[in-house]
Amino acid sequence: MDFSSKLLENAVNEVAQLPGIGRRTALRLVLHLLKQPKEQTHYLTEALMRFRNEIKLCKNCHNISDVELCEICTNKKRDASVICVVEDIRDVMAIESTAQFRGLYHVLGGKISPIEGIGPQNLTIESLLNKVVSGSVKEIIFALSPTMEGDTTNFYIYRQIEKYAIKVSTIARGISVGDELEYADEVTLGRSIINRIPFENSLKA
Image (cartoon, rainbow, N blue to C red; front, side):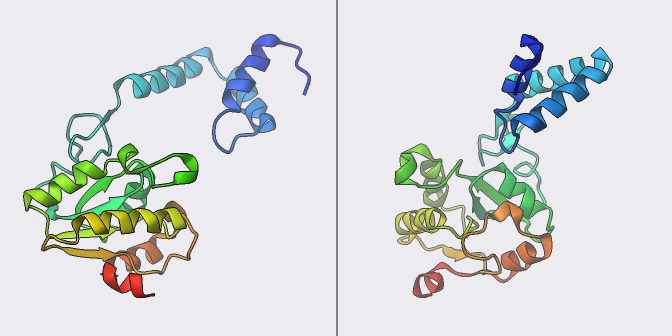
């Protein structure tokens, strides 16, 4: 792809680094911005810069937040004794859209994947274990995508907490094996949360 402007080429190259954005799409987006009033580009730039510089991770659940404790963790109507373990913020948003879960979350920040060099120490597993040890948790719900990495992560955490007197469950397999949680439709995901099963049963499947 030949460019008549180095500035245009640089802008396209930067936008093309975003997931799912090819160079043709990046070019279309950059040219769209060029047609807009300069103020519009400034608003976009300012929003992205503020997001990058000011965003925080909730100290309790590691969800993205504007303040130290996110709105979900500070909501007194939520059941703090039930924790849904997810991979990242996209999964929190997917489950919240179902309106079927009223507990709290714990965002791991990824899944155990030796191939990618991601081990338990790279995730927020230790802080999850601390919650269990504190005695305030009655149930842990595994809501990781049903992939090999997700199952490996579930099993690793389960082995760490099985000696404690808490209920450990996993979402029902209404989600196809290998699918990512964020792409599941709300009805299927909602039913998977409601019809969750004891984790021990999933090991026998």
